[in-house]
Amino acid sequence: MFKTVKNISRIGEVINILIKYSFEDVIQNSSLRQFISAKKQVSFQYAANEFLDKYNRWERIRMVIEEMGVTAIKLAQYLSNRPDILPEPLINEFEKLQANVPPFSSITAKAIIEKETGKKIKDLFLYFDNHTIGSASIGQVHRVRLMSGEDAVVKIQRPQAAAKVKTDLRLLREFVKLTENYFQNFGILNPREIVDVFEELMLKELDYTTEAKSILKFRKIYDKYPTFKIPKPYPEYSTSKVLVLEFISGCKITNIEQLKKWGLSNKRIAERGIKMYLMQIFQYGLFHADPHPGNILIYPNEDIALIDFGMVGRLTKKQKFQLADLFFALTSQDAKAMATSIRRLSVKSEIDNFSAFENDLQELIDDFIVLDIGEIDMKELVIRLQKIFFKYKLQMPGAIFLMFRALSILDGVGKKLSPKFNPLKYIKPYTYKIIKEQYSPNNIKSELQFTFAQFSSLFYSSPVDLKYIIEKIRAGELQTNISIVGFDAFLKKIDIFGNKLVLSIIITALIIGASLVVIAHPATMPTLLSIPLFSIIGIAIASVLIIWLLIYSLRNK
Image (tube, rainbow, N blue to C red):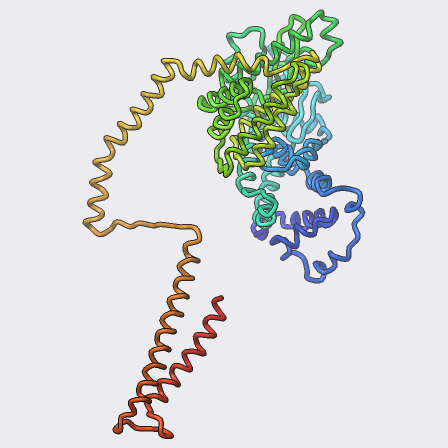
């Protein structure tokens, strides 16, 4: 409970925020009600609320998140990429959230750098710009010049950011425990799992060494592609709270005026940008997951640079093959193959009506594939596809939604550069390439080797495992635990029924026995009021058992 949380007053703040935006039902229908007096709970139904009439439920949820602070906003932003978890109206509201956090002072920034590196600013940099060039909820960025004369940027984590986020995560975990049943009633079946995944993402974001490692991986990939630029990290200056990177110059990819001044082709820039991302997704399975215009820079010579690697997606080899099958089925207008690919791609799928699922996909295909190139909206296509995931409760890997999000953003960027831009046109050749790789002799050989290795392992370990089981059986130490959901309740019902049946048989036997004794009436048998004593005792016991049976039946309805 919240007694285990150091900042116990925070729950009071959360409850007040919920009441402010008329979410008394969340308190009443969850364990949060234990923190509210009975008198105040009764007063809920009489309370007037200015927000209730002005805003719908989804808007009020967004307002609650905004008031709860940075960590809650980041959670909502993460969930805005998960339409398999949340309904569309709530996702639309969460997409409006922005963590507007003012920069902290350059004096504080310098003090953090010096504490983290153990060196003075004058010994680290020839120049330090006191003005920030970017500020976010976790950190901010300053221009610097290294002692070697190289221009760089330094990303500094906010003071106490890690402590605040960890406290909020702890509170969030406790809050979910208290409100889990409420969320489940609204179709959010795994709130604790959601918090677990979000916590992992946040802790990675708090450790700048994770971002540095991602950058090094991308630089290794793009080492053979000189026209694509990735900033160089400087590990000797960097820690978990300070990250120094090469300064990347250039203009935003959507700065059409500057591109025109440089004499660059908008259409060609859009094509090169999407090809770069598709190569990341399908060829390497490691992709930059936040391709908004500010993170894609263009050089005068048409080179493209990527910055900010705080959000990175990773796909397994198997997921790449399944994605290729999915897009190939989409462009081939094969709803059945598309349905099969989606089911294989999902972590968990329990589709009750596969025909209806296939029909929904066919309708999606009919609505989009027949359109002209300039009319296809990748974002709308992705939204429609994600609605189908939500409808059929398909649990997809998080990387898949990051990939869909990236493609949606790139579609918007591409259309701003070239109105007839269509990502599907560029995806199709990659699907052919991946499918060819999937069924190539080398991959088939690799799969067969893996399968053979699995069977070999099973073959070699089976005799040892079998011997162990036999030894346990001989020693009488083998135990089997079987758990069947709902079976305990079923056993209880059988037990109740059995008890009733036994009592009924005993009562019937006593009544029949007593009746037979009355009819036979042996002369030697003692009597009471001319009735055999055994008959009276039998009827009395039967009467007591009948009353007991009635009470037992009423208690165990």
